[in-house]
Length: 452
Image (tube, rainbow, N blue to C red; front, side, top):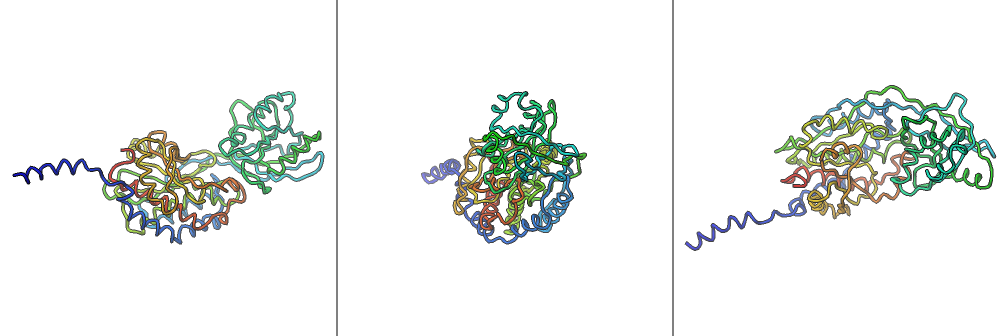
């Protein structure tokens, strides 16, 4: 009789017992995933093929179309299910021939790259006196009288990408408001090696569109020194840049279909397009290839999570974001089936961990998963993460995660001719694959949804 009463009490006690933390229940499988990723030979080979054989991949280009076709075929070779290339219309900007030269007080060729979306100069080019400023406030203080008819140089020291990139985006229109005929920009990058960095600008509708180009730190500071010495500096700029009608493109996607809840999705990826210089290796060849290989490693190990684990290569991140918006539109009313979205778009240096948005319960559960990445030192999970391509999903409530690395050199070669495969350390790339694979698999397999 006493034993029966005791047995009855065991039921509620068992129900009240807390489930083991994810760092315990997934310890064995995560160790298998990490070991497989750190020994993987295929991911780096795929990255090398993409960058060395296909090359840079600007929206609208033949090379981007070739990359999309190759990526789709590669996902099928990797055994992913439901491989598809949903169509996306993208902007089509063409650089054309371009050059710049200081013509006064000395002749000196300038290393330059036109900014993405820039208009062309006239057929003869533009020759104008250069006005050098270090901030928007300094430009405004000069006023129209000292700027009209001249070429504005924003010689702004690099103080981190998020702060300094505003001069690339807004500089052309801010200069045009005061009558400038062209804009030059000290490249938004952390390394001075005679390397110009391109990137998208944002013309305003209400101001004239003027040609805009990035020059190197060395050339920007040369112009500054001559100006400070009282010299009048003049530059000749020639650009054939032009924008064609929107072009046909596509996102690329494949998946491991969930074994219990296939309608629920964890999506991970990066962007397949790149700027038209370099090879788009770190930005964002590593992101898409690490994401693909993460899913491929899960597949090779014979793992099938509860939910669908999907990899997506979004198109047109660099100069429009059309791929991310099209993917959100494709999700439609099923947006609530998305458990999480993970983006890798910060290069493949040594991974440190993940940023998570929102905080609260989602952050707490992600930190549990993060502890599984202690063996590779990628166990830091902090609030604030995501990415441009998953931004439309996050806007409508999908938790977003972004892989972050030590970030020591990414902006040395970002958007430049030097973004090539030789910059990528094989073992660090493999660690990124491991981090993406563990985070993606556990999010897709754990009993409850992230944040519940």
